[in-house]
Length: 415
Image (cartoon, rainbow, N blue to C red; front, side):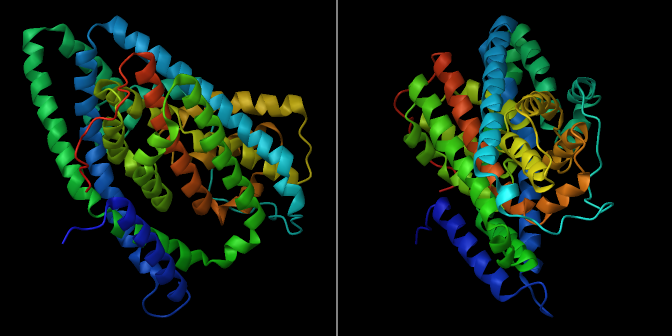
């Protein structure tokens, strides 16, 4: 008997997780939905287990096939230019949504967090110096062990260029790493079979811990934020695809499993292998995918960018602190720069928001207003970032003339 496709299995996992979390809340004695969180932890650990080798193998092969350093530099500049363009758009959308819908004012929060409330986030100085020192690995093995994707990418770029430069001897390494990438995709197919259980555990734990009641208290805020995400996904990304000549809804259909998986686990990394396969099927060049997509997971987190301006302005509204147009533009530019240095930082979005709030004399205790629903909001952020990176990869493939107008037929590894 053939199993339903992965999308259906993940959706069933979400539904079953909600039911288990609702009927077995954390307040009950004995078994509760939070006990199933171990399934989510196992799945995410499996994903982290394969990301490092997969990124290294695919990226080195892709760069070696790109050829000389000039080609790598040209594609790299195009990629970074697009990432910053998308970042600006996502930051602007976040500001527009929060200024038009004004969730901080409409909700009229009477009991604001008391001064000294522990929000579990330490304000860190985020600077270009921190960023540049962070991206250069002191040890490639350590970068693999800690899943520092950006550091793995940096080493892979140097390694791939060197492999391509040594000629015939390099072809041996390329062939070996190409074989390794195929092995890792096979391992991915095994890991993805566990995805529905990981989703079930993640959703059950969230519902059991926080309950569905928290959604009603913050319903307007959640609707505003998710409305902004949907506007970005369909209006902004859809327009970009229309201008570039990419069939947007066909792409959306292709990556739907990756989006649902990231949404349900609140992790864009969880769908990284799935997104690679979806883009290959859609017709993107393999060497462009292997170069652009890993960079996107460090430089192009559209959902998180939108959240940063939205959340900061929301807290300002809740505390009745008016922000002028000039201050909001300054906030946007600050976030555009500092957000690129958050790779590998735990609870990265909240850390950057905390640092930005300090610039405008907003009380850091205001973060407590978001902590209760941060996991729910993170689900939307993660799914949006996956779609943003899928569009980015297609755009660069199109600009490089390496986008097939007809999707290629590749058997779905997760089927």
